[in-house]
Length: 100
View (cartoon, rainbow, N blue to C red):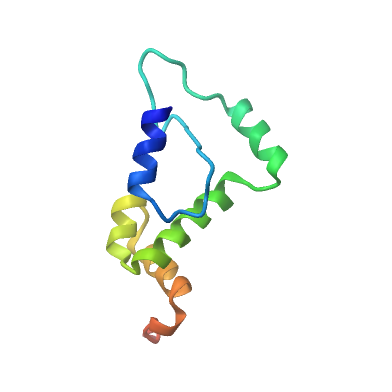
């Protein structure tokens, strides 16, 4: 856990999200069981936020930092059009007009 927290701090030093979320997609050790759905559900039920909201907030924060849709595609594995929408939301003053 300490190693991951250190790596996370190195990767995203300006992240406003102080929480750590480990899932089978983000971290997995073959000798240990993955985090169960029930455990994650319980944690999110107590906060009032959904995993999707937390994820969207993380993508939006990264878009504010970089304004680079290619970076968002590579980091989060999202569709390029979705990445462009996040960048436009984060930087409305830099958004190009939509082509019809």
